[in-house]
Length: 263
Image (cartoon, rainbow, N blue to C red; front, side, top):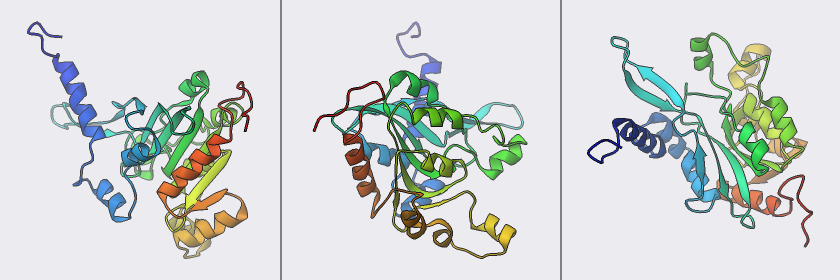
């Protein structure tokens, strides 16, 4: 606090950043694209899945700073493309850990780390997948000069999580690259009819490699993965997908150290 009893300038800046990243911007092209496609915004998804006001976000200040080329001053911040946090979910009041991809954000900070908190909290992990799921974009790789491959940090920890807590994933749009790996490293996964697709690389990459001109649905839509076993279930809507997650978790133990459920 400052001497006059008002919050310091630093606190005010943090509050402004928090307001910016947690408030939908109808003029943002990414947000507008999501709504035009009939999809929920990432924070709407969390509000729908979890109890009201129960989401405790980790790292809301995480983002990509944009500086003025002339004076180097911070002029804007692009929010992280993945939200992470925990909550007391709607499944028997159990606490869950959630990661949610924000496909409306491009060239932001990626590879958000949730594994440390997951290891200590022993809570079920829910992944809301959309896009490369924190794996970054081609544009971000061009500016960084490298990708996260071959080390692929975090995949081993994701495998470990499967031995400790229930891991469930909802595919809420095109899921590609690292996101596709996360989708299959789950105890339960659900995709949405006509909305979700799953593939290692999208149609443009496939066309360059095999000269096949395929749509997203033809390459990795629900009719393919809903039948070949890659994804467990297909839902008609996001709301139904969330309900399926609740149902599945209601049959699973909290973690590997908890007692079996009695029905």
